[in-house]
Image 1: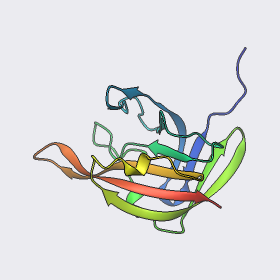
Image 2 (image 1 turned 90 degrees about the vertical axis):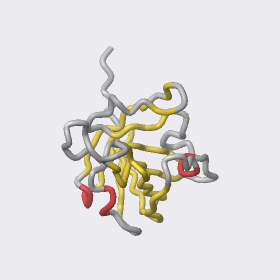
Image 3 (image 1 turned 90 degrees about the horizontal axis):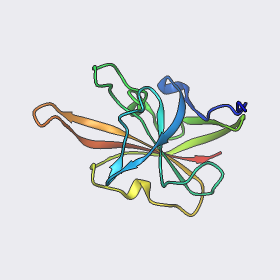
Length: 144
C-alpha cells in the first residue's frame, strides 16, 4: 500500500531552504551524511518532532562538486528569524534563539534538552590546506 503521508520538510525562506528531511544514520562513531545530497538529515538518536526534546538536523554547506549545499546560507540567519517545519501535513513554526560556531568535537549541541528545541548543524571555516572544516555552525530555535 502506498503511503499518502507527505515527507517532513524544513523551510527557511531567508536562507533559501525548502528541503525534505531524511534520516542520517549513525555509522561507527558518527553520522553518515554522504547520502544527504540537497536534503536535510535528521541525526539518528536525537529526538523527533513532537517528542518534547532536541531535534537535530544537519545539512551540507557545500556539495562535493563545489556547489552550495542545502545549508549554504545558514550563516546568514540571525536571532528572531523564523523556521518552519511541515510534519504530517501540519506546519510548525520556530524562532531562532541562538546562532553560534563551535569546534567539530563539541557534541553539546546534540545533547537532549528538557523541552522541544530544533538544532541545525553544518560545517564552517574550511581549511583548504588540511582539507577539513574547522568549525560547526549551530542554529538553535524554539517553537513559537
